[in-house]
Length: 328
Image 1: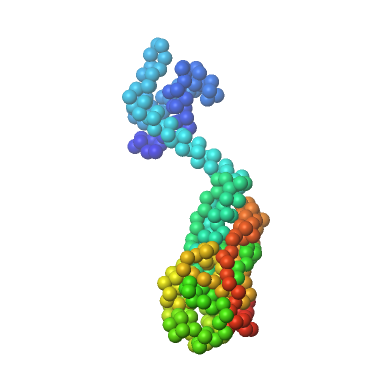
Image 2 (image 1 turned 180 degrees about the vertical axis):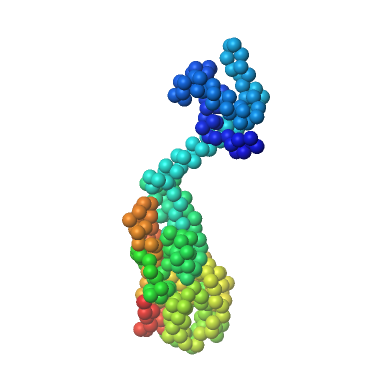
């Protein structure tokens, strides 16, 4: 803090507070480990530096002036804040406190993070989180730019040649076709002639995602194979948006199980018969050996094992062919 004459240092604030709160200059000197003449010189230098008298000196001792009482109130706040900051830095240096910055799809983060954070809190109760809800390509960009430490993505959503980070498996979830409740597909063999015209129209209105080239190509291949007469009615950037359209009866969409809340009203799920989506934590390889990231990866894997998947119906006959999303 600048006074216009000199800088008031933390050391001087410590000395000032010790003298102001002690019964005598002798006691303050003992607490500070200073000789009394040295302490008197320090106080005189402080008052000279700030340009105002902080103590009234009498034969019976010292008492604070109005300026001294004002400084004491502020000095106590300052020193308390400094002590708290130093304690926090000590926790950072010991690995018991820090900030974990991570990125991923909202649907993945929403399903896994609450449980993983609760588990981590048992061993690292002071950890903070900076969470970025973004698409896979943006997640990788944030990792390359060192904006985040960990990314949560589907391993099949990006070209593996473009991922130069370590990958730690977290969870697998099945793909399902989400349809509006009331669109019964259980025994359906012919998606065109086996339904009333309005229901057939809804089944062929497809909602797709644009998270990245690899994912988009695979989903488009599935629709073309299972519903060759489908019509693309919407492209979305989030599963939440797509599912809201399904719930409203606008069409159907292919979604991973974690994107759907268990027993979500207005939506029925049918297993799509595809290889499951593999969720991985992507991070610089050396983070796997450093706390708290090492423990947090274990917490993510435990959260993946504990997560409750939504109930889905078996695939209807028209979806039981040899359609396969080839994994990268």
